[in-house]
Length: 163
Image: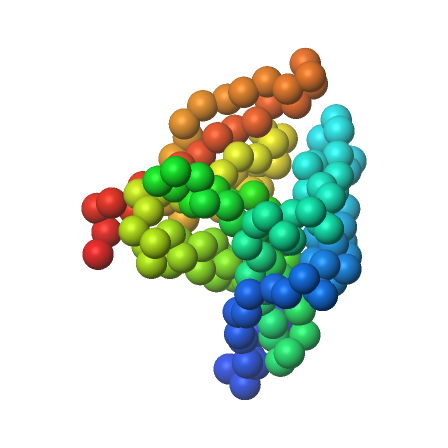
């Protein structure tokens, strides 16, 4: 059963995470990625990341609904692009457009920094995610193979032609 849509009275805010929120970031990510454990031959990278290090090196922006953490996006500036390392939405809140909202937020961050594109990679078996990224304007760039079991799909969304 799909969760009810967000109500007009719901207050959505996005705020940059602080170092003190590392446990919240880790916990939300672990919950969000649980559904992929049975789909992929190895755990998705966000499940094995060291968030004590990542929160110091990467940018994490958290989405709150009525002051409750419901999603996050992790980004890393790389040369002329912003790489999206992780998008996680609480399983109880998926299907409400929060992932799309977070992806658009990352694109806004990239524009503010005059970057040329946003990019990401995902497991080839996560077809639901790939479909969403394509719908958002991301295009297939290449496949890479890891450990003879995992195929990563690299996708990019150029921002240079946008205003």
